[in-house]
Length: 75
View 1 (tube, rainbow, N blue to C red):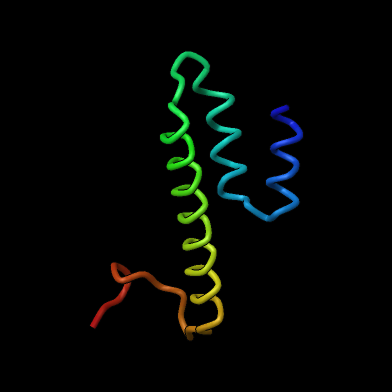
View 2 (view 1 turned 135 degrees about the horizontal axis):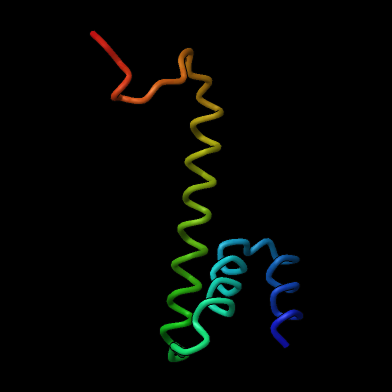
C-alpha cells in the first residue's frame, strides 16, 4: 500500500508530501500520528516545498549580477 501511495504522490508532482511521507514511514515506527496530524504534516511539507521551489526559481530568474549574501557585502 505504501509503495503505491508513494508512486501516486510522485505522479501527481506532490514532492513535498512524498518526501514527508517517506521520512515518516522510515523514522517514526514507534510514534504514530493521528490522521489529522498526519494530514497537517503532509500539507505543511508540501506548502514548504512549493514555497522553496518558488523562491529558488524567483532568485534564479532575477539574474542578479553578483551571487552574494548580505554578510558578504561591503560598503
